[in-house]
View 1 (tube, rainbow, N blue to C red):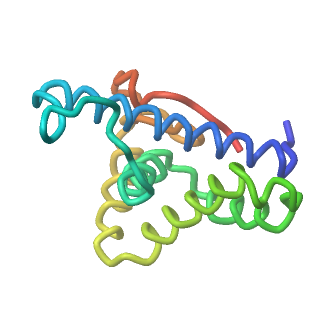
View 2: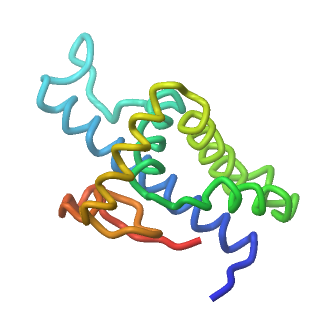
View 3: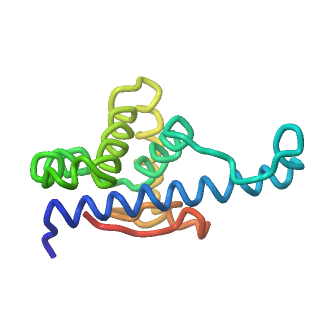
Amino acid sequence: HVRTAREKARVLLEVCEEVASGAQHSASLHEAASGGGSDGERGAPCLGAEDLLPITVYVVLRSRVAVLPSELELVAELLPSELAGGREGYALTTMQCACHVLLRTPFSQGLLEACGAEAEAGAGPAGAALGDGGRGDPALSYSVSL
């Protein structure tokens, strides 16, 4: 099944929404376990891009989607302008940033090699699975294909 740039952008948005939802849930659990916020304030912690990008980097790393950078380039070139300025565009930019971190940060080469060694050893599904590498963590386990 061939997907359009619009459909691919929607998948990227779904992944980013899952990352944000999981991070928000984890932060809320941590907040509750630590007894609330400063001065007794309660409520959902506010998470920003600086909180979500490292998690997105991890998801991209674990996805083992070797063609992700080229898929993101394709989406960036063909995404309709009405979507590029919205949530889909933000998701695209987030994924591009995550790929940039993985491809251009010296420490990431070791992570990429370790992830590749896991794939060769048969740990988890290869290809387009985004998540926990098949280890069964439902908070990190979902599958997409671009």
